[in-house]
Image (cartoon, rainbow, N blue to C red; front, side, top):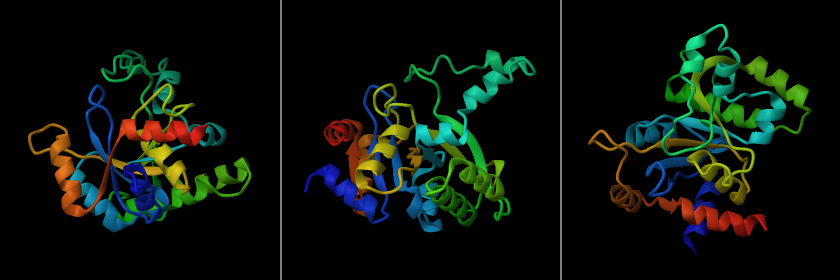
Length: 231
């Protein structure tokens, strides 16, 4: 069984997979899990062993239909009221020539502070369930408004319109891996940080994967498989 096949089987089982992007991009590894299978235990691992920002992805077409904006667009549209937002526009991201994938932040209305592992697991799992319901867009919007508040402690990420073409970030890499695995196409991801103040080195991450019996895949492997899958 190839590496991508092993990663897909892990995703189907609700396990964490490690995704390294590219040597000429962020040079980061993200812990990745299907949002529909998120648990407080998985979030604890991400929080303690990865240590980056825990985020949940949304496919571009669904975000657009529902009305979940990119945060940069929200800021840009409000720049007349708050001119500083225009000055701070993210036009100089060193590893990307497109806009940031950050969307809004949310908490489920049944959470308390929203930041605990239990709270975030509830928010992420319910978000994934609701946005992929077999309902009209209007009904999904109503369910989102009824069940979530914003801002919150779960950071949403919107994929680019054509994943892995205009943007090749972890948002797209993880989301396309979910599609190939046949699960709901939302991933929850978290960057792995090193003790030296930087992202964890690829060699260290590989050893972590071996120790914990996790699959480690690269962006190049995902892109190659995605191109075959999309044919």
